[in-house]
Image (tube, rainbow, N blue to C red; front, side, top):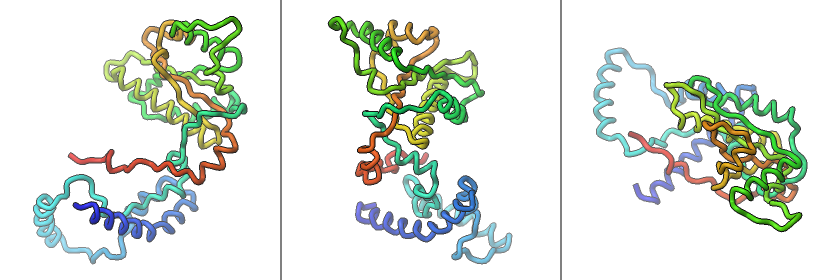
Length: 272
């Protein structure tokens, strides 16, 4: 398909999405932020034809199957308009607007807030429910200790009184540790993926709660000096640190008009 034809089709789909937008919002406002998409999919279209008899259905089914196999397009089918409204759904809106904030304000969530957010993200997909992750809270002078461990790992020599200031870019750091459990049915790589999923869900939860986050790591993350500081077991993997703090006002003013486009989702989709 040519680029021009593809552009025309996408323009047509946008128009079709506009038709369902009010219906989507109506379901959302009724408090059905999950089931509404399923309900919309189950509702008959205004253009649906009258139901056919069993004989007609059987005859047409075989011919349609053969025809569809011959005419099946290469790649996903985008001809059916989406009923998803990213702006109206708060979860999808948080996902699509999330940004990594490199310069954070001094305010942070307290430990009780962190506990509630981590409680929420424990719903992450987790084969066998092993919960193979944990977080370590790093505040105050502990950030300087982490800087010293990173300096030791990188053979960095500083003058008397100098410290590694990179660890002071946020008042709160949260170390994410993958902590695999012994289970013959769940390989270690899968448990690492679950831990990373918990970390990203926490990023989204913090963002939705109004906090800025930057997930940082590096080549020294699992060097012996750094691992000792975090008291890691031999089987554990340090996956980096979430730098957490307030979103500065200048960032808040820029976010509604952010021009950073999300990537074209077609590059991530295919069919067998």
